Image 1 (cartoon, helix red, strand yellow):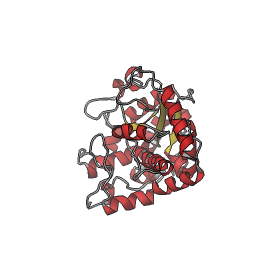
Image 2 (cartoon, helix red, strand yellow):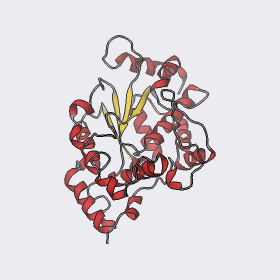
Image 3 (cartoon, helix red, strand yellow):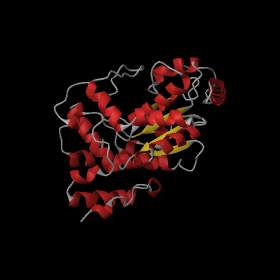
Image 4 (cartoon, one colour):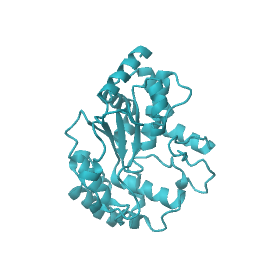
Length: 292
């Protein structure tokens, strides 16, 4: 795809804008990626950023962070957006705190990439992150899953609210971790099409290689320095760790949660998922056949 086409797409998307009127620091933003922590946010943002780098000939791959909006506008990027967990927070917020008013606040006309992963794979990864990487959680895995501020009930409430928007396929695109593991190329192409970009097959393949689990794991192991422009926070762990569970890029498997719970716990948790999580996400009874 030539730069002239990219420039046209970028200007077209910016013209559609966010419906917020005069230019703001976020002017030109055309999407926001939203999901629970540990559902593949870093994976998709690095893959998408690499695609943008390849298409625009940038020196480095953007991280799809709001601190990069100005520079991406200068290069007429066809894709300008950020990834966020808004409005999720982890001090006192429980499932009942989440409403349509705060979950959908400030989105305007932005296109939404809604990221999701099996709830129990997500919560196992979140537990490992909180316990071994940042040391913010001292309890057990099942304790975190049942915790009202971090756990399953809050996950379900968050995504069930988003399920009410799934019929707006021109505004909300569902990206499932499991689908990307099965065919990352097809899923990146689908994201690009949703964002109004005709995929360049060669750049897609190279971007998928860059964002692969193996490459990101290697980058983290080497201590490669990647930081968000807006906050200065490190993307990856970038430190020597005593256990693999402390790595940001830790395991990257589908269904690995099965080995972390007792069968009685799995039956109870699967029942909650079956009964409460909107079936359109595809996780009801998803792995129940694996139980003995």
